Image 1 (cartoon, rainbow, N blue to C red):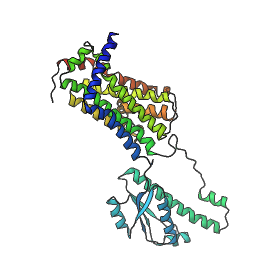
Image 2: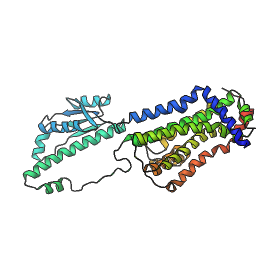
Image 3: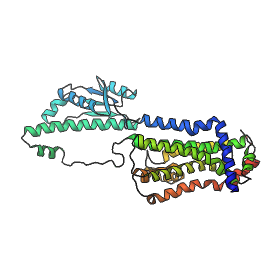
Image 4: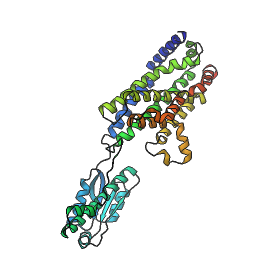
Length: 389
């Protein structure tokens, strides 16, 4: 009961500090909610639409105009420029006015009718890989549809049946399935990584910041005195308030994406709640560990921010970890967000049992226990260190 009473006293003191210092309110509630709204709104369409495309149509026939109209009707592309020559189109693409352009040379229609295999070309920029690949996909589709239309007309004129035409133009039918993200939505795949990653950034920064502020204003002795110099009780009492606030904010985020925006999930409420608790405990613990390694406000916050930002790239949601250099693959295990992502996609997104990702679960628990390694250093810093700006 004595320890419980000490924890309550420390927690009440921490709650009063959070109330007096506005930075806590902004970083724990305001900024996280803005991040949620920003990412879910920015990616609301799921995929980029109406990307600006240019056309160089030197054939100017009914067939070429039909190709351009079909390209303009594609969901991801919109023909906004018609250039007189390739030089103008290339300059516009280099200036960023268009992401791609389609080149239809003169005589294309005549060669099609004569069966002489005309060539149309499409050029796309990969400066922005997402826009370039989507524009390339649309233009490739248009080229295939154009050749299929001519082949269909030719075979039909020769008396082929519909079944024969279909077998000739498309001998193999592809039955594709996008598992867990059937719409190919970037909102479903990126928001569920970026937002938790940024929230963990706030957690690690604030957990290091609050210890640094104790040392800066020389209030660490007062903090420890409330816990009767028991550093474990002091840590639990201080961070239980942080954990409760972040847990409520993240649970709101999970409710918002799954119940309001209807993100796909097969896992139950327990799988979400378990992952949220692990996320909060690992994020806060890493900040405490960073301060224990470097008992300095500036250095501990620098370590926390660097590690959290790198974790967004190293978690494997945007670029697969298996395609990285072997050294980076090994390094990815050192980032809590990597384990969060692996557990999320297995248990929440696909509904698999947590035993399938037990090693990542153990890794997050290990991150939660990291402060045990530096408790004595944190206590020593509060009692003996002098703050140096």
